[in-house]
Figure 1 (cartoon, rainbow, N blue to C red):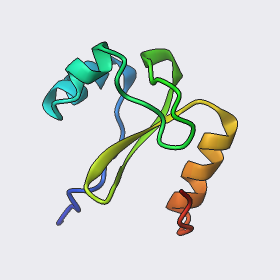
Figure 2 (figure 1 turned 60 degrees about the vertical axis):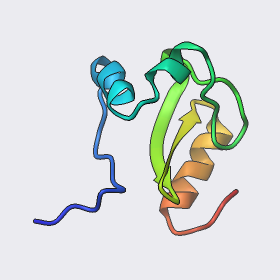
Figure 3 (figure 1 turned 90 degrees about the horizontal axis):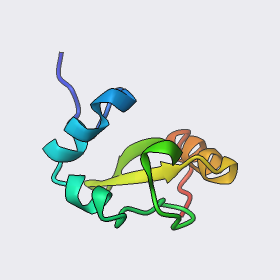
Figure 4 (figure 1 turned 180 degrees about the vertical axis):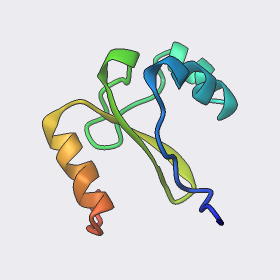
Length: 81
């Protein structure tokens, strides 16, 4: 089975640090430099709702309901910026 390299299946919160380290994002995360794709809120471990890849870049979504809805619409085929 061939997997698309732009798909992240599931990341459990206990594996978040390893994921961030493997993608060279851990230092930015620790320094609070990662923001929600839609509302620009700072992403912390307690407010991550989703992670996805857009145009080759890893994007984070906070747990705000409107941001979650935009993520669902994005994965439903709509292009929401």
